[in-house]
Amino acid sequence: MKFLVCLLLSFVFLGCENASSKLPTEPVYYDVAGYVSGQIEKLTAQKPTVEKSTFISGQTNLQTTAQIDWAKELELFKQADINKPAFRTSYTITRPDSLTYEYKLKSTEDKLTVRSLRVQLDSVTRQPIQIQAVLKTENPLYMSERHLVLISGSQPRQGWGVHSYQIEGFQQLTYFDRNNFRVNGHISR
Image (cartoon, rainbow, N blue to C red; front, side, top):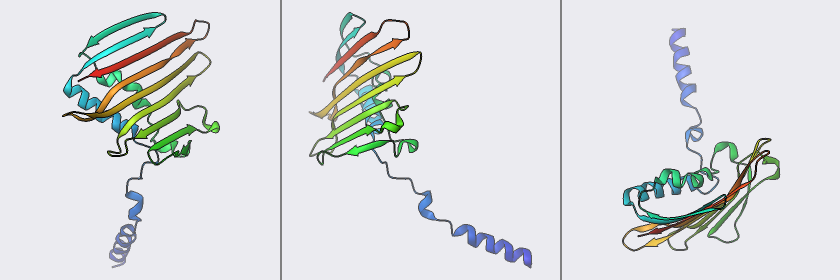
């Protein structure tokens, strides 16, 4: 009988667990990774033509192609996502207006890659018009800085989507020259 009472009491206490602790937490920052992942799926399915220019270490290359691996092409924009539990208190949040989110890395968190993120939303759709980010990596052997801009908007018969993107920055290994680069892509529909 004691066993049955103990078993019954344990079920009662286990059933009283706080249900709110099991609910997913609300994202603190704008879901850049979710937006970019959705655009990658959409662009992969549509296969639009892209006018792309690259400038790497003094060499310029221009091309127009529909053969783009969108997951690789927009990977840095996914890396600009700061919606991770460990980052919940790492950024200051500024709202210059109701359509703009600005996040800046706190000075105490200088080891994180994403230094700043700015998301500007459309007033009607509440979808991103522009996403800007600065990513910086620095250690004794390597330094890199990348400035990212993703421009989106409404498109006839295709809904909301990416219009253009730009990635600009540099990479430098210790004891080697700095390699500057710039990638511009304009999507033709």
